[in-house]
Image 1: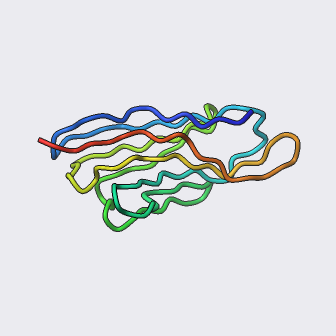
Image 2: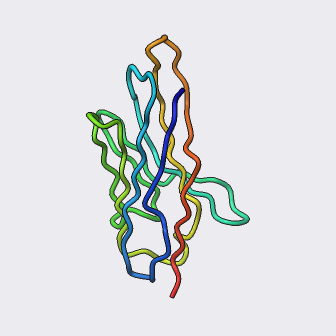
Image 3: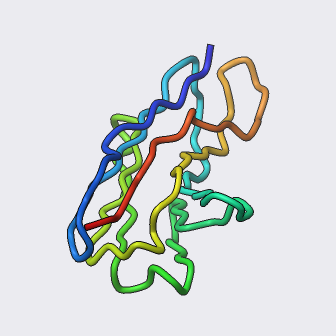
Length: 119
């Protein structure tokens, strides 16, 4: 069974920092890319950042403040979030494009972790 488990969310004051983690587990053959999305109340889910073997990509709203990184040995992706703003408040979801040892390639989601930026 494939799982993506996020951690690191919480309540932080404006200007503060948080680090999200997402670990993939299961019979994984290869992880092509991993990403973080977020969904704020009343808004559509949006891509925050993604990382593949060759590149990273960021939403304009987080460029210069967030950094995505990956530990391939641990099948884990991180999102370092600095200079947080109230507009960053959302449920953050981990996403991975993976191939299983059985040969199937699919897109998987974590359960989400709440990030709240408020004074």
